[in-house]
Image (cartoon, rainbow, N blue to C red; front, side):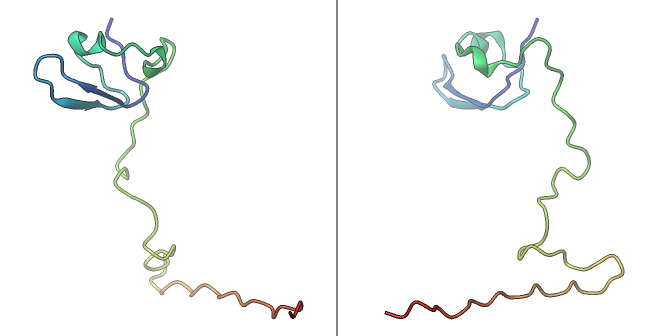
Length: 92
């Protein structure tokens, strides 16, 4: 039964010497699986397949600056308020 990786694994290919990176959820060929000796690298038998990221998988969050480009009604979002410091009371 093929096993799936739970974590990314870096190793060198035994024949070509190429550096390989196997990603979580990958099922490596048997020749590579034999090289992965850490038991924590593998998903346990009762783990299910990793969830499908869905159509928005490439969405990396809000625009730079932490705000969306516009609101739902098309108006630009409100500017965040700036915080001001209180003057220090402990004079030297």
